[in-house]
Length: 112
Length: 407
Image (cartoon, rainbow over all chains, first blue to last red; front, side, top):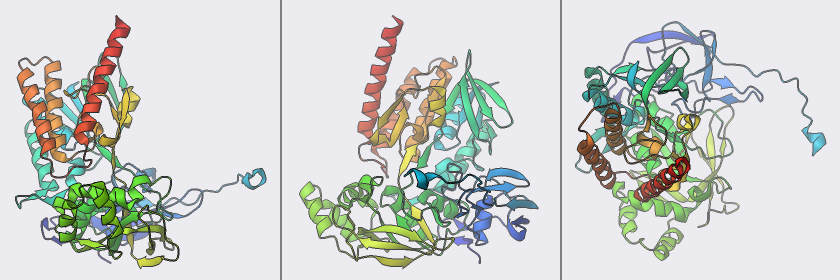
């Protein structure tokens, strides 16, 4: 699936064509060098960037300019990097976090 | 040490940097984004004279000019704290700490979300996110979208998506709940749309707006507003329908739309499903002020300016010595107003740094901000000039009160 806008009636033809390889959750993809990871992944049809720490539900970009921290991923082992602000480099290893174990019992029902 | 540090490389920050550099100051700009330009990067619209305002080109022009004047840039660098030191300011980033006597906050604006069931599904994004993805990164946010929230920003971005051949099912209202307030009421939305009518080629909205100058007519306009909506740039705009849920298994698959009455209440049994693979939430913009808050600036809530703004005067000085503001941190307005504010802030900083003979230039620059405001093509709030007057009254009151304390 290619979502790239290669030609635009006002902005013209896309100028960048320096594609590099990266992995996301152990799968290989190609993206433009220096584009944000969020753009590279969406261009490849990937919307889910992480799983909520407590509920495990899927999360993707929301604000796309660094304010909301919804798109945090692990980049080359460094946690909580914002995919919308991180420029893609050749050979990057990107991973989603997984749902965290929640050993704390939910007592709320007994206190209603 | 830099004479001046500017946080934010949007139109305000870049214009301030160029102004300071022109006066012989040594400038460093810090910004957390990858490219300079801020929100200006995503903008793309046709001016009344038929030329296109292309945010990428406008940003590049300002950036080139700043580079030619030896302004230093530190991109990809979030500032997480600022602190008043004995003399001047300390700026904290992950790898470094910077010091300066003059600090300009040009941090811009953030988007208010609208809570809608299903809003955390991948594929739901702010309308500004779709704009940046489309115009700056040239990646389609999806194949077919629904925009929740009808306002100046969402109408402009809907047109930009259309230009990039991204299909939109409709622009529609959010479900009326405690948090959505006026954005969910057809009558209020119609009122706010009256001042974007010049952007609308749709004869119904354009000619319609002339007939709706008084409240009675507005009410009538909503009551008779066709249930299937009107079209703007060929995109259906539904003011009598609201999204009550975004659904999908692991990502957006569609929205549930219901007919609402003139007060925004859902008419039971009118629910229908619209398939789409992305949803934009357009809740409007508010000034991004955290750094002014940690610095200890006094704040004032002004709805006409989009929210809480740090108190400042017409010279863009805050109540704290050596701390200045420019651009959307002072209230939500267009890029041209922001750039004009950047010039004033730059001149104020130059004067405070000891450059002589700037007084008349500062006064002219303040008039130029007002001119830009009056001639603005897109106004985010129809009463922004009133908001600015409220702010100046508050500034005078604050100054008077602090002076009394020190007597």
